[in-house]
Length: 255
Image 1 (cartoon, one colour):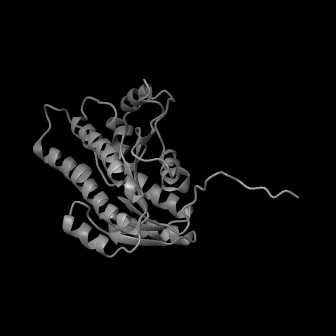
Image 2: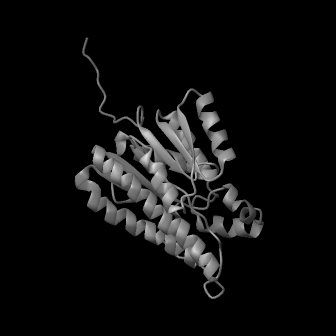
Image 3: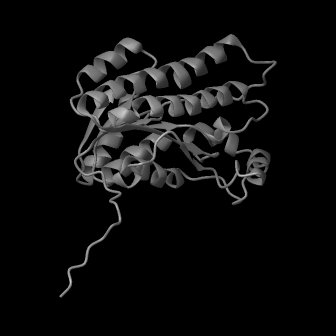
């Protein structure tokens, strides 16, 4: 009998340690659960203790391993202290972020500072802290959460879009810099996804209709739509993928 073998790379991440920021709800929560299901030990990070306790308990109830870490990623000292306690880190899902739709002419400095601090400064510092661990151990992957608006513009989203364009540039530049160290840097760019953050906007039928009209596949995204891309990028199946973004946008950015 001829022995059969497969050349299909695994999309499992068994034995790896993954950190997900903003993991208490929405896409971050989904990523934490999905990576645990794919075999990773997950560090569940958020500033909201009750939320990450629930996520951790859900992972453990399914037989997975998880650690809850309460940390506000806008606090640089807290980030430094948290990362000093980590031993191995194979996967970072740099998810924490926010969006406050506001016209360019009406934008105030408070909103500007909020988005720049969380979506840019904190994302940079978390990625940097993770990269230092990964470089020291000789491997790892950083997965940023970008957006459709990291590729295109949209009225009323100038600050948010600007922060996601930063993530696109950060992904490309750091991927080149870290490639010789065997550390990959990639991003996932979701379209409008039905998350708690978008709940209020998606309750408006006119907003849903306008957004849906821009998506060739004709629907608002679900959290589950994003998870396959994240797990794939974290896995050995994506071993030669770095410096790019997988768009999960139903074709919005295709034209």
